Structure formats: structure tokens, C-alpha cells
Image (cartoon, one colour):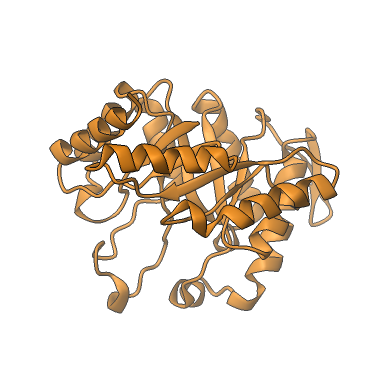
Amino acid sequence: MQIGVTLRNMGEQSTPELMLACAQAAEQAGMESLWITDHIAIPPDDAEGSGGRYLDTLTTLAWLAGHTSSIKLGSGVLIVPYRAPLPTAKQIATLQTLSGERLLLGVGIGWMDAEFRALGVDRHQRGAITDRTLAFLRDCFAEDVLSANGQAFLFRPRPAKPPILVGGRAPHALQRAVQWGDGWLPMARQPAQIADDVALYHQLCRDAGKPPGSVSVMTSLPLDQPEAGREMLAEYEDMGVERIVCGMAYEALEEYQAGLQGIQDLLL
């Protein structure tokens, strides 16, 4: 089972100096992947913890790619209906190319009413918009020549399609992951919360004639309790989870490094 970690691209921890130091520390510690989140327009009354400061997800991942060499880079998750399909596809293909195909594309439909209003997007259409965009992305990575709005165009560069991991809860996220994705990316506090849904997702894949997709779980590990942490990892692995993305709470580099050491201790 692979272990990834989060990196704060928001709030006071999102300075270039701290982000770079933490990202390189995670790579040096042997973490499989590094994950950041996505917000565009935080309202003033919901800015606790970030002050409304969020660095753009795809831009930040591209910057991190230039300062790392092997660690995979994940969006956890990119809110699909916030963005126009063609420019977003171009950004994703560019990032995948320049990073040496290290992108893990976690995607979601979003939830924050205020952001949808600020963007002028109908929140009630977010599922349909997401499905159309994911279908378009699939086509972009399958063909050099595409058509949009009646106009044919070349889609290059066309690197290998990054794994698309669909975030969200059952049942809709599972159905979307089967139809458009390569895996499911849920959040959970404990393995038991998603055990039945993991089994259901794998069954839905088989029913669709597809091999079971991967499951990556965003969670927190009890880093101060190594035995409990090992038991949790074993439970996730037994149910078929392929990747754990461990949430990292920190104010400074030293705390981040301590968290990385705690993960390494779990794996001994």
C-alpha cells in the first residue's frame, strides 16, 4: 500500500519557502505522493483556518513539479465544474508532461454554495457539468484531433492520461468513478466507515466489465500511537485500499518533519 501526505496550499503555511521545504522533506522521506486541495473564492464568513488565502491547485502542482523529481503530485480534489473544459484539459496535459507524468488527478463536484455563486455556476448542475468535462478529458487523452463547438483542433502535447480518482461519497461518486475514473478517492476517519462502499465500488466495476478500480483514502493516522496506526493501515489494506493519503496538521517545518517521521515509524 502506498502512503501519500497532504501539503497546505492555504493559509499561513502556503508561503513558497515553507511549501518547498515540506514538499522536499516528503520526497526525501520516501512518501509516494503529495496532495493539495482546491478552493477559488472563499467567502469572508467562512475563511477560518485559511484567511481566504488559497493557491491555485494546478499552478501550485506545476511549481512543485519543478522543485521535486520523483514524488507523485495529487489534487485532492480539483473541483471540475469550476473550470472550462478545454483550458483545464490543456493545463492538465501540460502539467502531466512537465512533471514527467507524475500527476494523480483527484476530481470532485464541489459543495460550497458561495463559490458556485462567485463563479456564476449553477450548483444544481455540478454533477452533469462534471460528467461532461470528464468525458471530454477522456477524449483529449485518446485522440490528437478533437472537436469543440464545431471546430476541429489538435490536442498536443498528449502525454499518458493521468489516473483520474473520483472523490466523494457513495452512491453517486462510485457510479462516476466506474464510468469516468480509474479509482475512487473517499475521505474517512476509520476503515469501517467505507468498508461496505469499497466492496460495492469493486462490485460495480465488475458489473461494468471493468477490473476493480483503485481506492485511495484521505484520512488521518494516529501517529502518536504506532500500534494503532499499524492496525488501521492493515484494515485498509485488507479491504483493498491501495493508497492512504495522510492529512498533515502543522504550523512549521519541524512539525511537518515530525509527522513524516511518525509515518515512517508506522511502516517499520
